Length: 472
Image (cartoon, rainbow, N blue to C red; front, top):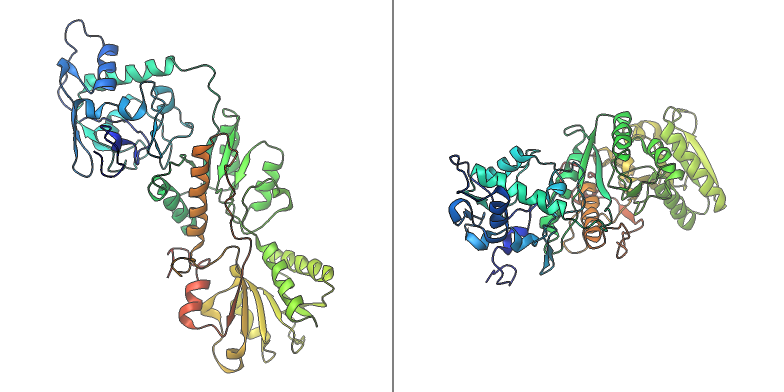
């Protein structure tokens, strides 16, 4: 009996955390030839269905937890079915291991952190060491077996044969891609990749679809790679594409192309991005929500600090102006470089500039309330002396920044990563791309910090500026 799954079926552990998903592996041994009259395909079928190799020997191997598998207990068919398409049991799904799937660079949905492309040599390496062609390692549930070179060749012949007998009525599944900068160029993007790669483990026993990472040098390189993939694959789903700093350009690209965009990592909300699914509110919506807060609590008006040198600051200032006009809220644009301009007493200040400039430009006109989007907020820059200690800070976040179950403050990569895992799980259950249920992402909370303490406020507001840690 398998204690983890409650199943008496031999070899079931092999499906828990695999990308390759084969229920057998080998340690390089001496060359051996099939016995007289035994063709490679017959040997491959015996390996796949019965766990028997050259000379009818029982293949042997060991899982990461020390459990040994021998012969029929390690047969591939136990987990992946006689047709190689994978089986469902106990809420888990074994991946498709037909050769047409394993050799496809952008393989269809299968459980695991990433889809990788195999040839016979890289398959041999993976079965020997557990190392995939991309250098990542299979999980401990993948056994390492003593298959010989001739046995690996025969197993490949069997997987090829399974591909040849595939049903021609099978509908193509969409290709699931992640789009992120090259490793090491953005800490938040690297952390997001690590979190999503862990989805098969964190979502157990629910299966998740795999995601193929496309890494880019710059926006030009990203769009070039996407166009190349689109030339071969008609149906693409982009999950958590990392668009920080080039949202408008990506929105323009997707507006004329049938690409499904889900949970984009973006601080902006371009107008052309309406087809994007499960968007967290961008800076525009955060500014609008802060103006709504000002209208509710300070109907006498609001002052907006804008940096005339920064196009983003000017853009968000225009967003604030339109929202204030809609709410009949008096709004004064304060170009903070004009030293002769003073803040009106009693009015909240919407700050859309770097915080390092705040004390110098505000001077003695210290506002009672400061409204600020989370991207602009830096706890280390909060003045802590004099009349500043009476200032209330209203910070708009694009997600609930505190974990409801643990009370811990959440980093952006954790929030986007958790949501991505739920999306990949939904896709595993419905690979057509029609999500089975809404994700119920929080629309937009406001966090009120009256005279924030160093401990709590730093834990909350430091995440977007320093996303290298999940929580504090």
